[in-house]
Amino acid sequence: MIEEPAARAAMLTEIAAALARAGHTAEALRTAERIAILSEREPALLRIALIQAEAGDISGALQTVARTSEDSYSNQHLVPWVQARAGDLDGARRMAVGIGLVPERARAWEGIAMAQLVSGDTQGALETAGAVSEAGIKLTLLTRIAEAQIQAGDLPGARATLRAAAPGAKAAGGEALKAVARAGTAGDIAGARHWAAQQGSPANRTIALLGVAEGISSQPSTGTPAPVIPEK
Image (cartoon, rainbow, N blue to C red):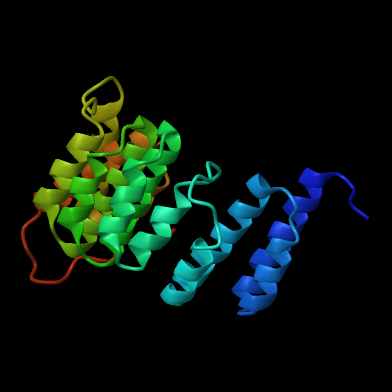
């Protein structure tokens, strides 16, 4: 028997999440409610809500969110994530603005932008990305937006996004990465994209993707669609 409250809460959270993923939402909620400490229970409830939203049960997800207290400080970014996934962008934005913790607020804006990107609103995602104040989160978000732009064939847009993501792309080492990426696109676009996606740091990955975009744009048009970026 687990006596430590934090360990017990972690165990119950994992059980609740597994139940939610299996479609046993009612049992998942009952499991989460067994967590005695409010600050530990609310992340479990919000995790269930995210699983519901990802499964398409938006109404159920919002009902689960309603079980949490309005002043919860733990994992606050998850609430606007669910709202955005549900299509309530205005509500998600209002919630994000009200989050006091800077990292949590940045992650909230990230989730809103990703919901917009998934729905096909790339321009809206770019505008939302402007509200992200954490450099690392913003870099990752802009890189993902650029990947979607490359996949959609919007190379000028992707180049602009990537330059905004890594304004220091011309720093030492940056040009070398771009040159390798451009060379790769000359004979193997899919391989070059895969190589770029495997770069270790977000900055190097961004710079490499910029090179891929520029390499693709410099090639003569063949009239054939560009390969889709491999899923990671």
